[in-house]
Length: 68
Image (cartoon, rainbow, N blue to C red; front, side, top):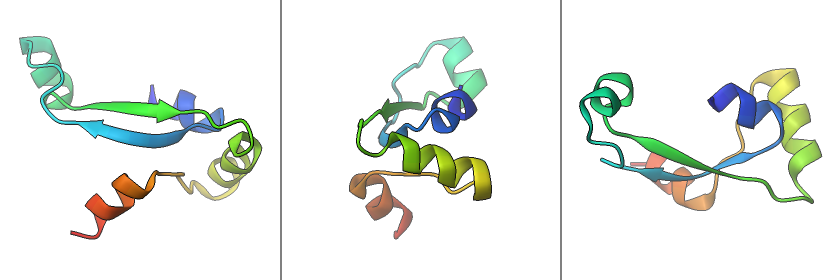
């Protein structure tokens, strides 16, 4: 699912902890879900960066989580 959205120019917008607490959700993703955002003026650049180098576009909220 991530590859589909990222290769189509989306950015990772938000991480939802314990969004899916079903047995299947916990088994597949530990209950995590990600929201993707498609901003029209960023789609092409995000797509090119992901396709060429694997660079993933993320929101400032996600960047802040990564700095912890």
